Image (cartoon, rainbow, N blue to C red; front, side):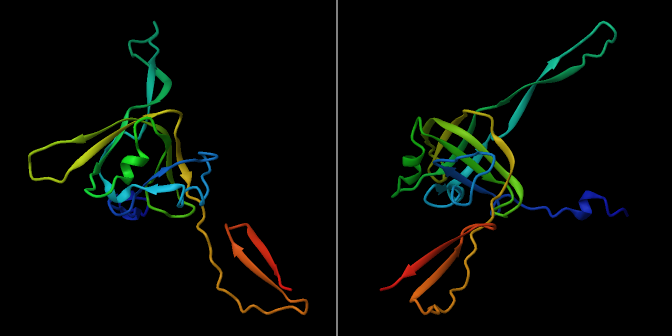
Length: 202
């Protein structure tokens, strides 16, 4: 059997328990969100409250291009569009944190980490959105209370974005003092940058 067979090489997974759904207040560049931007306090994690979702995909409207030379109706790619998308949440009896973040008219970004928070993975989708509506659902059946939030996609989404590198924390070294009484603390803030803070004591 060929080793190129996808069924024998893929690591398949269930999205539940793996994928992440975030609401971000601000993003400087949707094609390159930073670790700070997808972390608190800019990030509000919706993952554990979502019971269902639909949409969240970019679709194309092809243009038919028939011609007199063939009976086949050919087509070419047309304009892209993102249909209305929504998230259905479990309603919390004591907290309205989600409702406060996703009030009608609110603008922000829904970020989907399809394969989870795996730095370097090209599996993050960023959707600029506005909340179109939010309404509670009512049922007399034996089920948990829920509410549904509908979003409009306000601009072209960024798909297959690279998940940013995680913060790296160095073990704290012994604070050896120089003769001049100075100590230096180094904190790594990304894979390629660091900040250095000098503390000068009298």
